[in-house]
Length: 190
Ligand SMILES: [Zn+2]
Image (cartoon, rainbow, N blue to C red):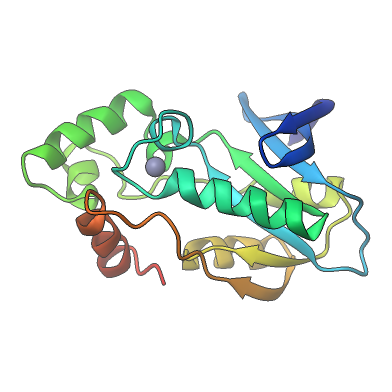
């Protein structure tokens, strides 16, 4: 059950978007859109999970911020697209637990083992709301910007056709080398 609440203009550093807020399972999520969509056209899409430290505080521990900025720039340039911004911080474990996991990573654990040690799944993100969100915007076919095979599986489960996958090759730095290697090795990201 997904309930759309409101939409408003959102001028950004990367151009004019419309921000939509919706609620699923008691949690607020956002969609950022540009342009008009139709069922015939493939829509440039990013499904982005919230990362307050990366998206809002410019953290170099991960690659979330640059990935979000890349998606916004790419959509702005294309003139249409959607970013579905899901409020599932820290791969779904929440901000507080994410910082605790960072503390364990400072002691040498990787992001996978730190989550497990804290009693969480390595990746607890949920994508059950995607079908309703795509349906709301009349989207049936997408060009997805992702390196994450789990997202591809979730999109296919939502009944959405993937026209093409666009790899994200941004946000690498000396602080997140180990993190990105873990994502590749243990989460099987491309
Ligand atoms: Zn992040």
